[in-house]
Length: 551
Image (tube, rainbow, N blue to C red):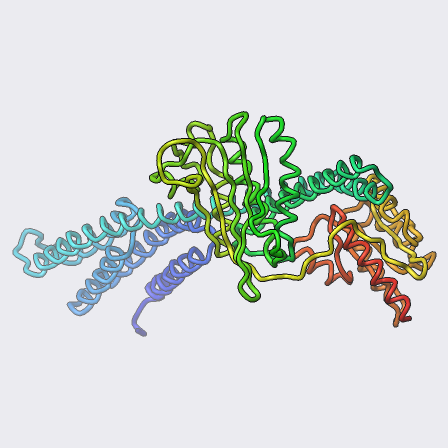
């Protein structure tokens, strides 16, 4: 195009730049993190660039048409037609942007087609151009209406997706806050609970009258049940995202039932309810491997349900039966009460939470406890149900709630009081604990053993004590002021001489699997949980003494 004047070349170059700008604006909008804002910004950018683009192209077509040559006239018309199709078929956000895009090329095409020397003369070229323009406008206007509807739908969907994403994040935040709150509540509850259980266990090691020993045992058993209930609440919240799982331990089921009944005994007496235990197989060992917390939770739910339903002067009876088959034991636990019977039509739904049966309406309960019982038994591949007390007629009162499951047989646990380990030498222990009550508990539990106990009130004091004198064992709390337990453990492992390694055990209430993994990664050798289990503490002392004897 050596004959093209320089200003026409400039118009062509400007057209190319405008196309690039429109393409770039679309690409930038597609990569923007906020689709709603990007769509709004692209809307006005596209309108401005399209108006400039079509205006510049139409002006270029006019300049070409001014060459009084039939071929140049056709070229000008082709340029205007291309611009019209591009503007008309491109997605527009509104009718105004559509009108702004098609008006310049339509006017340009009409101007090119009309013979202005004789505008009223019959001009087949102009007539054909008018028909073409009309057809394009009719077709594309309908397409633009559809495109605008789709654009609006996409915009609404984008907003809904953004709102859903925000709602999901809010729910996750709320769940994290709930978990953090439960963890904080657990820590605060376990601190006084550790003191109650610790002092009660220390008291049981003293010389007591039978009545005093019974009271001390009741405190310990009630505190242990409270601890397991607290663990159950925390595990229920903690496992919502990952799903339920069993925590298998060795447990004597007969001892568990009797301990639960001793805790519920005073409540039964206050209600005027006879509370008894029937052991159908007294010669059978009920030492099994099972999730003790879930079994106990199911039993407590049935006992609580029975106490609520039974009137004064009534009776509640807990029955235990089993059948041994090799290394497995089939267990049946029944709780018979003196409350209203459960009609056959209500039995399939009485274990559903918030399901109101006739018996539930009389008692005014929600059924959540029974639903938890059913959930625990399902997790253990067991069954739960309710039946009449001995017959199938409709006379009399009472119901028998039962659950059954099969568990592996375990070795019978050691019975009686926890025995202090015989220590051949004094064990030097550094205990980092910020709570004065917990320090007193440790002192009481270890007061009669051969240990030299030094306390530190935070991680920084623990580091100073460790640097100043030798120790055989460090008990490290996790949450402490000045310097936390995990940080102190990492510093000890970093600074201790090569070839030496002092035994460090975390003493904490935070014992979820990921917590324990973090402690071990920091350099801890193990974890003792709060409230302190005296048997576990004495077992640690025995192993420490054994390791010292081998050195």
